[in-house]
Image 1 (tube, rainbow, N blue to C red):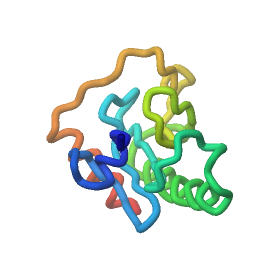
Image 2 (image 1 turned 60 degrees about the horizontal axis):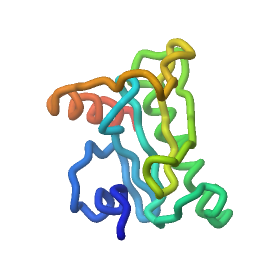
Image 3 (image 1 turned 90 degrees about the vertical axis):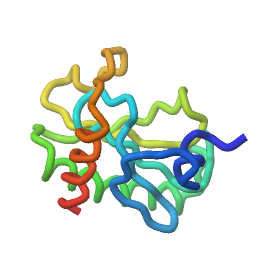
Length: 130
């Protein structure tokens, strides 16, 4: 069965997309820790990051680098943190989280809720910094 991320990649489910190319996609996390929390995902559906072939892994990190730069340029934060957990969705993904304090990347925190309009505005703001 296709992962939820594959369904987003195939446009079967909506997402607030930041950027996309032939191999990778970045979109806002539907359940963000903070404003600007973004997921970067290889289009190749592989469960664990360490099971990616080296070329896909390196490409993912390079794509995440560009997205992180755009987040840092567009969302007020001290830096952008990165986390790879992968327990909830069996499809490799990188969390890019704007940080102003250590607790901003605590996945036990309650998730933020933003309106569809606010989510689109955040996505547009990050896109404009690419």
